[in-house]
Image (tube, rainbow, N blue to C red):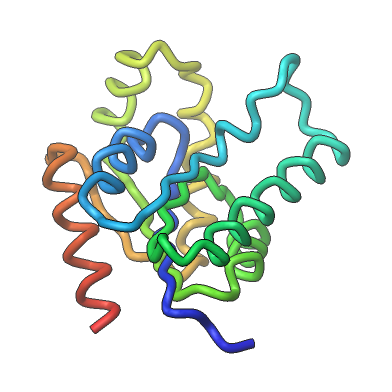
Length: 168
């Protein structure tokens, strides 16, 4: 299928790395853009990952993506999600087949990441899963940004530079 002139920037990385904070600033800097956080689609209580809930979230993502593609007022979608393994990465790429996609992986050194988790009052057990998640990211075609010593503005500037460089 022919791709449209539309673009999608998919920001991924482990929970608490800063995807949401970055995307909230990024979409304000890109005209005619929409920001979708997959975490919003998983706000289910109690949080249960089963086939029914996965199917619902997948359907919602595809629907939101298609309405973005169909909206002539929008040209750029910013999508955030952990995407911790290659099959999900491939699935998102398949779902977003009508756009020019750039996958951005946010990383940080373990000490900084740990401090961000504490600051956000997150579950520190995430740190135990990090080596496996990072090993999976090595298999994916992504642009990496080490956020260890960067401000949100610097991260956003880097993303804008990357997507401009890739698309021209």
